[in-house]
Image (cartoon, rainbow, N blue to C red):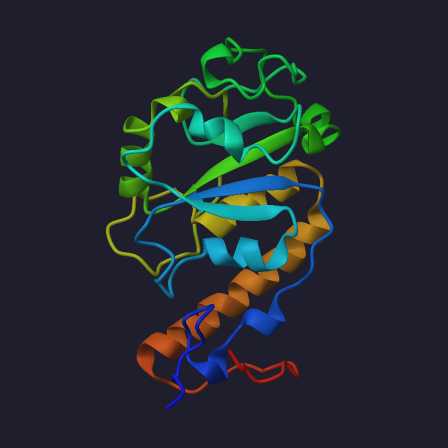
Length: 229
C-alpha cells in the first residue's frame, strides 16, 4: 500500500508542498549543515530552501568528523566559507584569498563591520553555511566542530519575531532555518526572491498545521498537481 505521506516533504500527500516551490534566481551558494535528526521531520524548514534555491545543498553533520572535511564543502575554487550564526563578535570578511579561503586554520582575523551593499555585490564569491537544527542542537554542533569555530561569522540583522512556532522550547527572537534564508536574501538585495520564499514558507506553515491536526487543507491549492512521490 502506498504511503499516505510524501517521502520528500513528509506531509500528507493532499498537503504536499513539493510542487509549490518557487524557482529562485539568486546566485547564492548556501550550504545547510544539517543535524542528523532533521531530515525525517515534517517540521524541518531547511528543505524549503533546498526545494527553492538552486544553489542550496545539504550535508548531514557528523559529530566524529575530523580532519580537513570542511574544505570539501565549498562549491568551487576560491569561495570563502562564511558561517551564519548569531554572535556578539560576528564579522564579515575581506574579498576571498584563494590561498586561504578553503583552509579553516588560515581564516581571516575580524574585519571591518559588515556592509550589506558591498557583500551583495560579491555574494557569489562566498559559500554561506547555515546550521539546520534546533538552536540547542546548533550550539552543540558549533562547540563540537572546531573547523566551524575558525570561520568568520555573519550575523543577520534580525529585529523581527519568528513566525515558526512548530518546535517547543526554542529561544525567543531566534529564526528558523528558512527564515534565516529569507533574511539573508533581503540583506543581499534579493527582495523578489525573498518574497517568493516567504510565500512558500507561509504555505508550509498552513499545510503543516493541517497535517498535525489531521484537518483538510483550508487554503486554495492554487492548482498544484497532486503528489506522486
